Image (cartoon, rainbow over all chains, first blue to last red; front, side, top):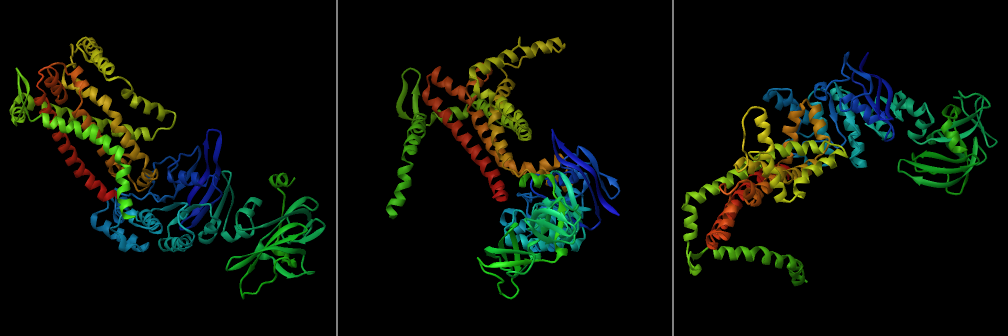
Length: 355
Length: 284
């Protein structure tokens, strides 16, 4: 049963289509991420849900009620802005309390709910501070508490972690998920960070040029990207162009196997292979041969650049016991399970780039 | 090393310091000294010192009524500038180019026109045979004469003072996070409540500086009251001019000028301390 429904929602600025007929059904309690590069229309979509941008066409339905043209202050949705937009002249407690005041909640209950919300984001000791006295991560928590204290049917997060440094960002990702699961609020998050979207969402919606191109659980988006754009946008991907075979492709005279092969035999196609699905084997074995041209260490894994007959292939190798399968300049073989590779028909865009 | 670091700032600020001493402190001191000189109508400025200029001014109901009028006009002008200027600055900040540039020019416009030309323009509008009066006659309301009244002075002052209110307020609004109002709306605030509870408290420093400028300039204005107030309605600056140029009683004029300066300073400092202390505490 869909709780929040977007029905061919569109936004057109002059002759530019920012959002092109987006259809989305979000169930109650679900955490959905709108993922895409900047300018893909994800923020505009969020603004239309929030009532901050007026849709050019389509409808927004919340819990069976159409709210397409409703004023933002009547929708009652919780919004966390990219800049947090905390009220600088109010203390943390006053910031959180503002929404309750607007709802004419009595003093005693207001104080109780503000304390509860601040405890939820672990900021109970900071109630009397002003926003300028807080760190970036703490401001972020205040913004979340302020949005959640009004018990909104839907929580909207606009690039909530983009203003935090890398370490804090990772911490807040888990924190965000914990808070969302504690209160169980239906949440829609806009982000351009694929890691963020994959790690904490129930479902990822990928947007591209104002269109929704895939909506699925994170693992499916990662393992079965619907388009070549998604496969390269989400995670790293080796895309090898060639001619489709029954089970794989032929590229530069080499046969590369793949089980998932929907492309028509004989047509030009692309084989997509995740770096972590490739194993480095001794030279002379495996499906593909090459020479290690560069090696990078990332702590949890190594990344190898291997020059092969079909171009440079990226291989990721987990740092499980500290052993290295190959050193720079060494000839190696590359192997993978045919079910890990995927062949798709070439899109117009990529054939043009390669031509 | 320590000697150099402590003398360098003084050395660097020397040109400004000389300028300030020569152009502000010296004339003011001379005026202050002059205000204590005795005066005789037949001889002129005497070489003896007296407090009689101050006692004359402060005990004469004629002068007191002029001080009172000056304060009242400056105060009304300031209030009107806040009432008109703050919403105008808010609207201006919500405009897109090219309208924003056009309206900014319209607002600054009065400052680009000579005060004499501008005042004559107003007298043509406000006089007994002026446009407003004629319109009133046509509507059957009889003639109205606004010229040579306090209202005429206030209207012309508000006209020229508005930019001094709008620009600091507009600057303050520009500095705000554009997400603040949407945040307030999303929490259930109406547009009006969002402006009142979120925007206004944060631009109070802009309003404060704007009203200080407007009050100070209005209280010491000379040309507008002189041209639109007529010979009868005097303000502080015009009466100082009269003492200097018509009565030739320079010491008395200097005393009036000094009283106005001190009164103006006291009012502005008190106002500044009162509001700024409150605003700084919150905004940091």
